[in-house]
Length: 515
Image (cartoon, rainbow, N blue to C red; front, top):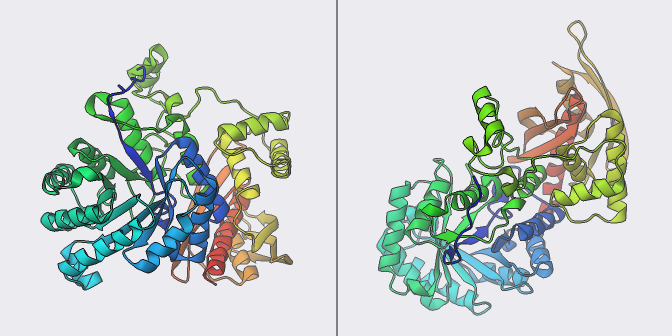
């Protein structure tokens, strides 16, 4: 099926990306400044309209990340989140003020549940505070967004009253969020139509939605809202975010692109950048994309059934409603190996959505690439991304793996010997376990003096063949915090040790940020 050109008469849908803010609130998805900036650069390539870069008052680190992005990226609106308080708004503006058309995004709950149990305020107090906050933000910028938190469980007449008042105070975007993912599509569309019909000055602002996926309806609710008249949708890459996540940008955009006959809007999104963006988010956060995930999952364009394969060989559109190339998946993949040079590697890195590396970074990546190529016949994109994570986008290494040796078998006690560096100081030891990976984890915990609890362990092959690059993801708990660690290596025990130590490094990094 050939992609349909969307008529120029279609209205533009504003894509507000909150991967760096709400997405980072996913358990274990904390990113450092370098990672956030690289991802923001990729979002610019993707051509999202607004990047919500963070919550500046949350921490010094979050402030620095937002400021770094606002100071250095142009031609895209950078937003910062702020509660309805002068202190929050001032802090947000300090981070955003050098940006291109910066947006202050302030919010306040409007549902009686939140008013009674969280805010302990009356409706009159909420209305007064919302107006005061927006008016204060509007002194800094004409680009002010107000969100009525838990709007779908609020009294709609009260929401309309608040919206009308904050528009007069200077809000230019109004967000109607389904904060708990509670709404049904028809119900949500009806709420949107009611707000549009009963907010007298709504024409002065853009109406937005921010949907959560607790019932698996975030994309469906967002599409229903668009049909009802919404012209901004808040999304994340891969649908990551609080609890079950947010509206998946890639799904929303490709629905609109694939079914233009059903929608009156279009977007600026460069869809060929969808897959590189998805991979980058997955690699940085350590949150693997489920294979059957729409648009970006490993199986999204895979065909195993003989009937399907026969149809595909005769005509691709028999079983594909989208062209893989439209989301950045090439039909043919150039396989790199030990005879490939720096130029081929640099080209592949660029095609994956990464900025050009410095000579020093490229040399480190190339050396690791050559080392892997000596052990593995074919090097694929996922191999390269794993190397990039280690060499170019690393979490600061409190702990570093130097060497590992393991012994196991059905008549042998599983034993692992490990040498590591702790803040540059060498430590080594060996230990027993139920299996070699268990032995490795116990030995690492003893050598590092850490007490993280392993909650989840997953291993997958990210490349093909018996020499496949293995990828391990672990989820750890440390002082009530959930941390994700990720590691990749052709040797699965080494990959597991790398993942565990990556998680420990993330835990140490979070503790350092608190100081």
